[in-house]
Every structure is written in C-alpha cells, then in structure tokens.
Length: 189
Image 1 (cartoon, one colour):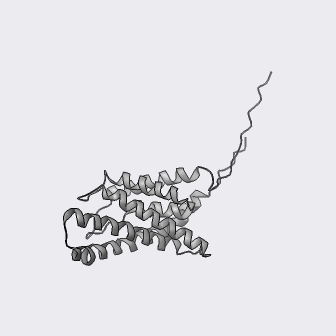
Image 2 (cartoon, helix red, strand yellow):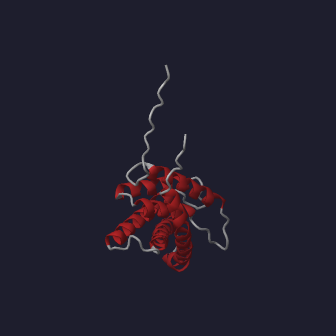
Image 3 (cartoon, one colour):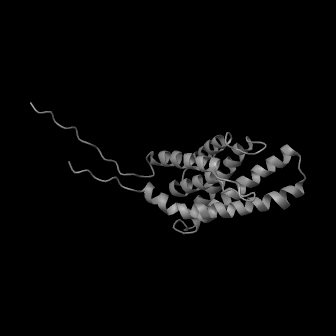
C-alpha cells in the first residue's frame, strides 16, 4: 500500500501575515550590527537602526501600536551598543522616531502620496531628526549642558545625520521592497 503525499498549502506573502515581523527582525538585526561596527567619521555616523525601521514602517505601514513596539525594540537593542554617556536615552528617542515615521507614512498615504518615490527619504530624515533631537536633548539634561550647545552644536549634527539616514533609507527601500514582496520559487517535483 502506497502512502499518499500530504498536500502542501501555499500562502502568498501579504502585509496581513507575519512576514512583516520576520522582515522587521531581520532589518533591525542588520541595523544593530551596522550601528555597532560603523566607524565615526568626523563626528558623523549613520544611525542604521533608524534607517532600517524607517524602511520597515514604509513597507508594512504598521498600526500605531506596532510602530511603538518597533521603536521600543530598536531602542532596547541600541542600549548595549551605544557609545553615548546615557544609553537608556535610546529607548525614548527610538519610540519618538518610530512614531514620527509611522505618522508621516500614514499622513502621506492618506494624502495620496503612498507611491511618492521620495517618501522613504523624507520619513527617514524626519525619524532620524526627531529621534536624534530627543536623544541629544536628554543628553543635554543628563550632562547639564547649556541650551546653546544643544541647538548650535548638537542639532546641526543631528540634521546632517538625518540627511545621511534619509539617503540610506531611500537607496535601500527598493531592494528591501523586492525582498519583502518576493514570491518563492515553485518547486517542480
């Protein structure tokens, strides 16, 4: 008596499934690794983690609650690799950055800009600027720095890093999008 082969059920990749969780975890892991090993050049290092979660949020358009989760996990994972005087500030700053990115993506999609090619660049820049602004403000208070140091030295540096992250988000968005929506190769057996 010959055994019957069980039927395989194929499920097409969609945003409603759990594929977004896998892509989020993978990109955050890549972001953390790159954040840890990227050298500081003239005081400027891209924040790869923000670029990666900006890509994820642009791709998956998560709920506000999911975006908070993405920001919280990103902040927690940055704490051990932070080179800052106050690593715990990453939690608050990434919550703010991910929230900003999510709100901008939702606003752009509601305004008919969901296919705007510059959406990843703008959201990557804004998420980085808000996250970096919050982080440096926390650092200003922790270190007791004057407010002029924050807005004359720290914020301009955050803006430069924001531009760099916006460009990184823009350049990586299309290849990651292809990966996210890739269909598995059908096996002929």
